[in-house]
Image (tube, rainbow, N blue to C red; front, side):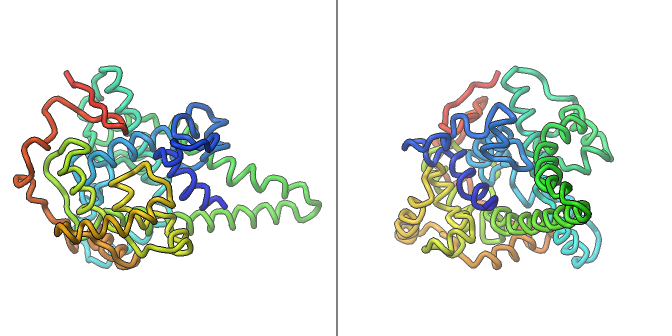
Length: 350
């Protein structure tokens, strides 16, 4: 049930997939936002929904594969790619990362983007020495090892982050949910501890499933990365969404449900505000258009995409560099302009 609520209802709602119809609270303008009550009742997960909206809906979707993409796997794992250790050691590190990635990496990194967006909107300077493109993790927050990581701590208070971002999910899921078991005479404590163990194992399994279906969407030696930016909703923009995304098997409710509808990643990046059913209808049409005009359309088994993603992470392979100099000049992003909203509105930077 929690899988369905997160992977299906919540993600599509935050993208505006149901804004055109009357679906009650399932509207991107307010869903899970602003109050702890809305977060708990609508979409309670490790990350803060407001932070996810900034990191994913705005930055990732409008800068896919570009220098400003916060989810560019190759860049975020550059430290691992450069490690001078046996390749098997790198694979082991990735394996250890899979069951914990949502709270270890995704929650703090989305929160970082929210904090930066707030400072930008207030026209305030970022902390001295901060590198906005660098990924932040629980380790870098609590055990910074260089001046760059120390600068990140000026942006994010680790104690506040744990209390306000991780805390609600941690306490409600792993303490309050099994707490009634303590009322059972004689065996209450035993049942309570077993419940926590089961919940932790389920959480790790959910993280692994999320890693396989989410992290693998835009990584592989058959996908492109870009060295500049283009205007959203331009011709070059739509081509970039396609050639830097990968689909999995598609076509039936059972297959799509098992993938959390993330198997339509190409269509999702082309039309991020469609509903799940519309992706099923649009996929064969978009694939046919790509075949007609010779645009690469990558679709493979999800486990093959997992292999290709891990190979990128450990440095065995690399993403392809797109020949951006061949794109129309009119599609290039304007200097001094940044795209900051999901509807494509632009704000001039001073």
